[in-house]
Every structure is written in C-alpha cells, then in structure tokens.
Image (cartoon, rainbow, N blue to C red; front, side, top):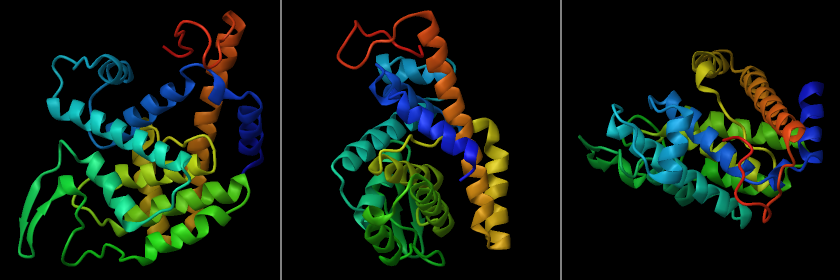
Length: 260
C-alpha cells in the first residue's frame, strides 16, 4: 500500500470520522450514487440523497434509475448489518446481495436452460460458471484471518475482481462485486471504498488489463488510487467543517449534517 494512503488511513482513524453525526450516512449515499451511476443511473448526488431521505423521486428521470438507487441502498444497509454481526461469506449471502440489488429492476430471462428471474439472485446457466462453492468458501475461510490494513484492503479488492470476473448473475454483477468488497472492508472496520463514476472508463480498463496480463497489481493500483481520492475528500470535508463550526458527535446536536 502506498505510503500516502497509509498516512491518510491513519489520519482518518485518528479523527474518528465514524463518530461524526451523519458521516456514515454521507458515505453510504456516495457509495450508492457512484456505484449506481457506473451502471447507468442519471440521478445526481443531491437527487440520490433526497430520494433516500425524503422519498422524493426526481422529475424527468427514469423511474428505473430511482428504483436502482433504492435497491442499492437496501443492499448496502444489509451488508453493513451483517458485517457488524461478523457473519461469514456464503453462496447464499452473495446471492442475497444480488437479489437485493436487483429486487425492483431485475428482468425474467427465458433461456434454453429454463426461466431465470434476475430479481431472485439466481445464477446464470450455460457457459458461464457461477464459481460453485469454492470462491465463497475460500473467502469465508480467510476473512477473519487477514491481518493489517493493506492485506485486508487487497483481500477486499481481490474478492471484487474475482466475483465480477466470474460474472455469475444475469445482471447486477458490478454492484454486487463492489458491495462484496465493501462488506469485507466493513467487517474489518475499514473506511468503505468508492469507485468514482467519473473514473468509470479507467475502472473498466483496469479490470480488462488485469485479466489480460494476469497481474492483480494493476487492479490494486487503480483501487488504491480510488481509496486515496476518497480519503482525501473525506478528510478535507471534515477539516473544512471543523474550521467553520463545532461538529457534533453521534447522539448530540439536532441533526446537523456535516456534508449536506
């Protein structure tokens, strides 16, 4: 892990940003906004917040995009609850993440292998392997034993890469893979990574080149850079707010939001 990211991560932890009122909610909205935007959502970050907080659907935007955002948020809240309970990774858990992601937008596919309902977390059939139980079993066995920030982050990045490469679902593979990455990070109480929508093209290139060259360092480098960007923005926002007023901690104040 680059030294600057290690320094930022230490600073992030020292500031105890997880205790700042609404900080976690801000991160959750950002994750949902960027991840959904990568998959085609046209909602802005403000529209995402209003939808999730006040159930206000933006005018002139496809309803499908609002449903995508709400489903993603439900899936994110689920994985965070499971991570807090320190539960393991199973085939059923990964399928449930996908089912939540696709709950209101999944289509029914009629294939030579039968009917596939993408809203149920069903695996693809045919020439794409769902990975059997080996992939989740390997993750589950190693999850509690990975030590140190760098190795835990790399472990989450590898899970992200492996699942999106296996591509076991008819739809929602990218969102499910990014949520699996976030689950591992939350399990180890690390700040959650964001793949920024404006870096979508570089994200796809990193995935393609990692497969082509069979070199995980390519994907690690991309995601560490995304992580650095996220930590810098978070710390800068907090520092700016601190210079303007006292920032309440959880359980204090009247709902002041640091970011909105």
